[in-house]
Length: 322
Image (cartoon, rainbow, N blue to C red):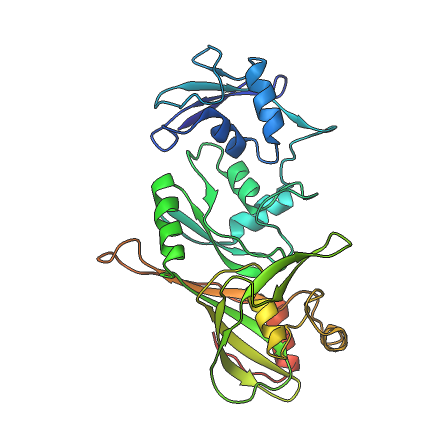
């Protein structure tokens, strides 16, 4: 896909030529991916008013795009503010975090504190930054998500076919996902399998929280201790399912809440770790291993821990070799 801007500094109108990856999409769904954060009501309004044109003509929401179509996308405002472009500092941070890239995917070492996408009061995230960095990229979509405070391996698909394949691999648990977590106390024994169903709840305050509940969805995590002492343990965690907050809830359920977790953690433990320099959740998506097909090469990517987390391990005298 080729993206052209028509005097973007004054009008903000974009002219986008549809490539093979976008062909077949409904125009409303296409606009939702291009105008991140825009509600559907706004998308339908600009379609009804004719502000969106395909090949210079009006179209309706069910219209399916064809390769070669030229789409006119008007500038939009969300409430009283325009769709936010990520700050230059964030763009540099995201660009520097790229671990691997080929024609199908980009894999990043997502920084802690940066959301994967905008929404719910967040102006932008990793995916918006990548689209700003690659304005001519025909397709960029998140394959999966990480919590805002979790760092590590994050996959972005560069082709719709790659996104479909990776979603299938995730459903079939054919992507090995390993995390590093620093948890409270001494982990006794060797590797352990945690099978505890998880259910999303909303508190009276409106806060969303996940709890172990027999009526919840099945969730399985494999915990393997790497280094332990009476204060804390460093654990490798492999996910067999990918539920919201799964590792954090399973760790707390086992009596070993994750350091720096202000939702499911231990307040006194968190205070103790702050005196050692921990300023974030100690949860890191350490490694991803997968193959696009049975006969193809394996993609095996590891994301290094940042220096601040290494410093905490040094203070705790927990030896760990990546």
